[in-house]
Length: 217
Image (cartoon, helix red, strand yellow):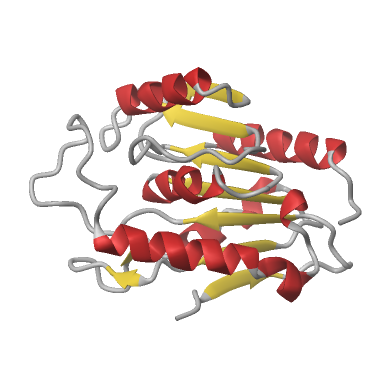
């Protein structure tokens, strides 16, 4: 089943794109509101809904459910879940089909995600030839396969995040650095959220990437 998405149009033909994934219990509409504040008026943005309905939040979606009693301090417990594997496959196939649909190659597409969407960004994005990855308030599912040309990564996390503890971001940072990936890491004095300072970091990261990658597929 293809993912349903919200797309922000642009006035001119585009040669770059931003895709953003929502978190657990949210939906595409929640993150789609960010396009008003990113100040990238010529960049089309795609906001897909996760494939699974959230069991407690009306209208909410999720990329996968958490095991009963799950604690981010625990290691593992997610990678082998059937719903995560299904979401991974659907998201990967959807991303691989974007160029045929939009004309924008993956090499000019930035994949971003918040919280559980940030975890999905790393899970799927490290194996695709994307322009870059943006992870806000995110975490690692576990040890992941890394593509031969893994994209640059921006991670932004709140020092007082009460949902995904900052130690999880630091663990992801260390794993990514240990694997020789191009990582820019920021901690901000914020909770489980995307503040204006984080949006400014995302915007600059994307603009720098697009300025240094070819606009020709």
